[in-house]
Image (cartoon, rainbow, N blue to C red; front, top):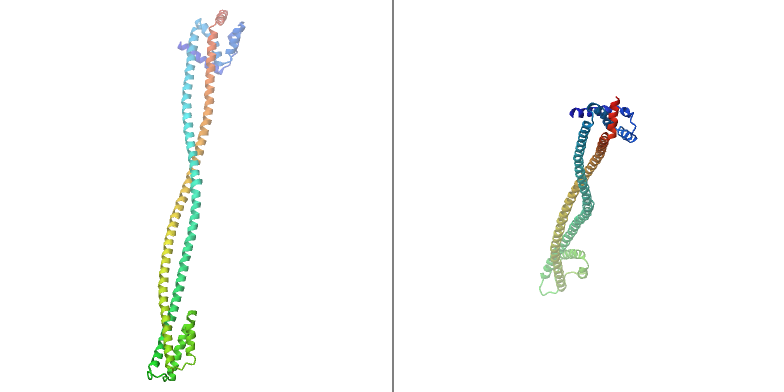
Length: 385
């Protein structure tokens, strides 16, 4: 059986490279039905092998039983090859499906990551960055206004203080001149007989008093309209005044004392106003300093947030680019895998189809070589030889 099986394989290999006349040993056969079956079988190499080997086997053994067994064994071997091919293909297909699932999952995850990060970028990060730019711009304007308010407050305080210095200097000068005039007038008032209506006044004394009164008048003229009545009264008293009339001298002293008291009150008020303005300026500076601290801290916080958002945007854009590259790589690998699978599937289908055709031809050949007409033909052919 093994030798016969080897002969079958050898003849198959020979028939795979040598095309013989399809009529061959059948050229004298006259059964149309049998001839049609033989013609159909000899269209394939394996069918041609079985038909040719049938006559050889009949001549050697006088029967085709051994051939039938050999062909059946050969058929089982082909079936095993088909089963092996299908088993191997199942492995290939399983691996392919696993790769497709894995690559598809990775591609879907990459696409999901891209869409998620783009949503974060376009819906959260970039709008917040623009919002922070507006906030920082507003805070910068507040900082500028705050600095300007500091300058204005400082300028206003300097103006107030300069005015205070000037006013108090004028008041002090006026008080000194009034005191000087009062000293002169008091000295005149006390001179001579106490009960005398008139007193003796030297030209030098008169000159000193007039000089002092003119200085007082000059001082009070700078004080504004509230001292206009004093100025007018002082003018009336000094015009044509010879300082000899004790009563007039007394009125002059009373007037100067009243003026002195008024100026002293004004000087006192000036110092109080200065203290009040200092306190207000200090409160204003404290307020501006507190506002500046708030603005500076807010600006620093929002600026840091903007820096963090800028870094986050850069990271997200890098991640998007990376995942887009990953997605393309997965899609390329998936495309290559599907193309390879398609090519391998065609090869597999071709092999399966070829093997199934071989099995069909073997089944047909086995059916033909065991029919009585074919056996009769072989016996007749051998008898004539």
